[in-house]
Length: 91
Image (cartoon, rainbow, N blue to C red; front, side, top):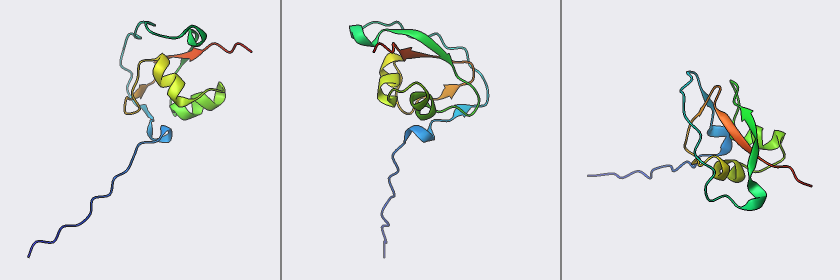
């Protein structure tokens, strides 16, 4: 008799995005296609232990905005010393 067990599906959250232990040089993608208000001029250098969620909270933005500005997907790894573009804080 064949018994099928349900598969647990777990979705990634911003906290799942941890910094990898080894640095990899990766050029940032061009800022093509960004809307005017989201032009990234501020750059943050990723440190060990950083997550996109922590960076977003620190700079009062959302993870989705950081993903868009940096042409990243939620499953992409962060590496130490990677430069993350931040949105302008125009208020």
